[in-house]
Image (cartoon, rainbow, N blue to C red):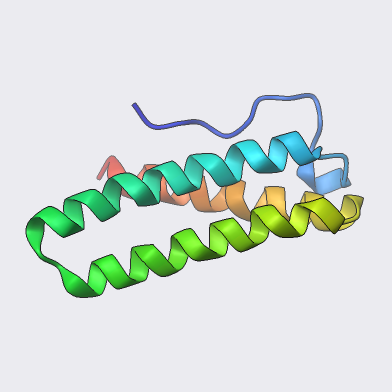
Length: 94
C-alpha cells in the first residue's frame, strides 16, 4: 500500500512544515524508489536502476540538508516531496 503525504496541521505553503513532516514525506518517496529499484533489478533494467539510485541519493542529501535548513527551506522541501509523492502514486495507479 503506498504511503500518503504527512497528515498534520502544518502546511508547507505557509512555511510551517516541521522537520518531521519533511522527513516523513522524503521517507515515503525513498520507500517508493526502493521498491521500484528492486523491480528494476529483477527485470534487468539498467537505466531505471541508475535513475532510481540517483533519486535515492538525492533523498538522502535532502534529509541531511534538513538539519541546517530554516523554516522556509523545510517548507519548500516538504512541498516538493509531497508533490513528488502524489505524482508517483498517481502514475502507480495508472
